[in-house]
Length: 491
Image (cartoon, rainbow, N blue to C red; front, side, top):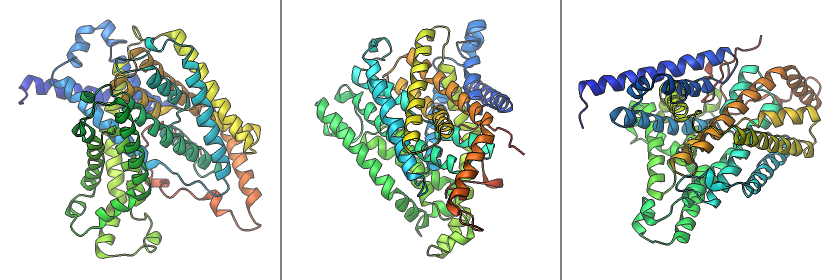
């Protein structure tokens, strides 16, 4: 298919408007000490049916037509942005808390997952789920999605907030990020199961299961659940070894020619494998990012000496982290803002926003999540002030909440109204977490110093308490995260 000159001009104009508007609003929100991703969503909201479509419908239809090459291209760029977002998010996950924090992390993760998920699932029984379900939704799928929406936590937004506040070195940050990582992995597995449950007939399936050709819904569900769990276990335990073997292989000329291309190929390979197996591609992108960062050669020169060094390895390891940072920064500059813009573009607050339901959903979700985290923290022996800090920090939905809304809406599991409520919940809770931690900065730092001092021996600092996770960037090496607020650093 060849585009006409007019179609090319329209596509370039729309893409330029999206990029400029997303980054301009992101910059404005960063100056207001809010996550920049919220500005990117608001940019789409303002240029979508909520505002521009209301005051200038012809201009909105010209910039963002419902059909045609521009619509297809923008949707494709947004989908690739979603895959890169999950890839980057997986690369930022830290699943190894310090020895002293493991009990706290375990208590909070269990309480913060089980209690809100179960209570949210029970609350669904009081609703008419058909009013919020899409064409592929059912009572089971809607119940699971509602429970996930109540229990989900965002790694990117809270990690970036704490980085800019100077809290990322503290045990408090390690607890928060470890709990968020555990919760997100579990909830993404549940999401993959939900997407497999949404298959209504063999014609809805694809890949390996479609070749089998069975028309049994029960067998289809069992197959998708088992394949998802096996795929998750393999990439989590062995994916980093596979990536490192591919990266250091003598026949891998792509890694020598372009380390960035090698990482993109790794992402696309994982996504393709998921497609063949019948797993949702975003799950493959998330685990590909997780395996890639674990399989990267050590970042520091001292650490390089801990592994066997060959000519190929030393040559590739020198550019590995630079390649990851390059891929990450370009994704955040182009593809990921387009994705978040398209999320805002889909929001129609004039026709699809039910105020009473959202307020009820907001109070229920925040109340259940915060109280569950607070309860788990108290069981772990945390003081009340620290328990509340953990409760508010882990209440931020951010990117995972938006991904949940987008993927389930595209799959037809939820409708426009519930999609709008989940996105707005993610936006508001992310803002609240940043506001709370900014105001509680002095107390959080004081608690962290007290906790560190209590475990130090005289004249010897506690290295575990002050060490950063192995995949955390500091100083000039750090770059923006997917839910980046860009808050100016404290002096």
